[in-house]
Length: 378
Image (cartoon, rainbow, N blue to C red):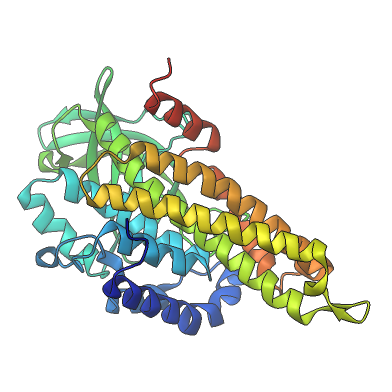
């Protein structure tokens, strides 16, 4: 059993870390304050090959594995979650369905510009009445002469309305009780994207509501076999949970880094507060839990790369890291004291960005349901 990263993975981690520190960190506070999408950062990530890490080179990707992808997400989230979720949603949710379920023509048509980072992709699963109960989809796709006529709405969709968004893959009822996935390209008549939603956190990421009114897409935009949409999105969510868990580890590590540095600088009663056992114990607990959480994420990524069942490991990683990140940002803000409540201090942004990690890609409660089911419980 080898717990060391390969030299290739170490070099990759160092490269992404340097990019996050040198390029993302100086603008993160400004992007958050202005709620501005980081187009320049996305362009630079594309130049580094980060927008297509797990996709083969012949499709424009970097030819990397899930572990490398998880490492990249962690390093970005360590500095800024808006940038990290932009990459994660584009890769795990936006592009991966086409790679896993698309035919060769569909892959060649859509994936190369996405994997190269020239365009972005989104995934439309959540609806106003279909959140944790993802199977309660109400959006419909009716067969017509020209393909499929889509009617319905989606909610909280990441990357759906940027200037470089290419398409969204949505779940829709193609018959009673039959869910299928279809690709809808931006600009299709009848497809409307709302203004950006105002959020508590992830302010620099693009999140919108979508509506479809007699929106006709070609028959060849059906992704995979008709009626397989439910099983497809469950598989997509399993993989996506690895990236969200990596985000949680990264955010927790970022919170620890900030608390550690502040505790060594801040002086009270004539000494740095890092000299007080109350602070030391908080930092010790954070460091221990982060190490354990990273192990869960890397195990899930490794299992996926080995072609072995990984749904249980991914759900465990997502659940544990989400709750860990909550504890970490809370402890870090407590160490910062009153300054942590001021927006000029980065821990304030990390604190706001954290909560969605316990909700998106399946709430903590849903993760426990998934884990229980994987354990064979009734």
